[in-house]
Length: 239
Ligand SMILES: Cc1cc2nc3c(=O)[nH]c(=O)nc-3n(C[C@H](O)[C@H](O)[C@H](O)COP(=O)(O)OP(=O)(O)OC[C@H]3O[C@@H](n4cnc5c(N)ncnc54)[C@H](O)[C@@H]3O)c2cc1C
Image (cartoon, rainbow, N blue to C red; front, side, top):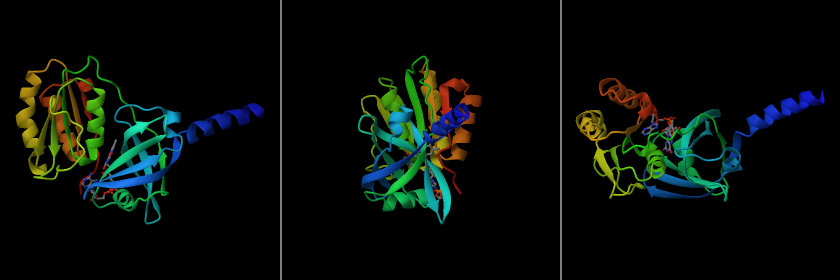
């Protein structure tokens, strides 16, 4: 009996260890369409540890229904038990929550599915393709992959990237702003030359699901980049 309770308790503890309540401590509009929210982590970082590009599943309310969306940790500080989240703003319950977020507001978070396998051998160039929703992940990736130079194709029409918190280092990271309608075409035109010059590339694709699927198939099947050198994950679903 006691053993049974112990077993159940252990399972419960394991399950509960993945669920946390985050509390807002402040927020800033970085641009009119990009908002950073600061939070205390409710014990999350101490319980789960932290890795590059780490993300959490947040539970928002959508007209009385649970609405789960993924967001990337920005500046996680396990000692302080804090991190920030950066929201690309558009329509949607997650965006609405972020727009209204004020100190004292809370949101539930589940840690499940996030992982980071550092590419080995270390890349001699990172080729990243993303947009405002994946900017926090790309910033974290480039920091984690240290000295590797990078080319970043960043989706956004003229001026849309202005004021966004890029942490790219102009000395080693080349940032190419590309209008959404031209992204696939531009990557197809420009990425092969970068691959030719790179013995150990690492390709990171985090756009909307359709663009991600198209580009990941192109890079893996047409260009023959081995799958362990390509990370492709759709970050949002376009209508
Ligand atoms: C691993 C992972 C990490 C992520 N990290 C971040 C992050 O750090 N910051 C961040 O902003 N997003 C991030 N995202 C993307 C975010 O989860 C989605 O954009 C999500 O759909 C937003 O939910 P919502 O409730 O605001 O909108 P939804 O209810 O999902 O969608 C409402 C409407 O908005 C459109 N839409 C949704 N997302 C976008 C977008 N990004 N750009 C333009 N239109 C959009 C939809 O097509 C739909 O029309 C991440 C996704 C993944 C998978």
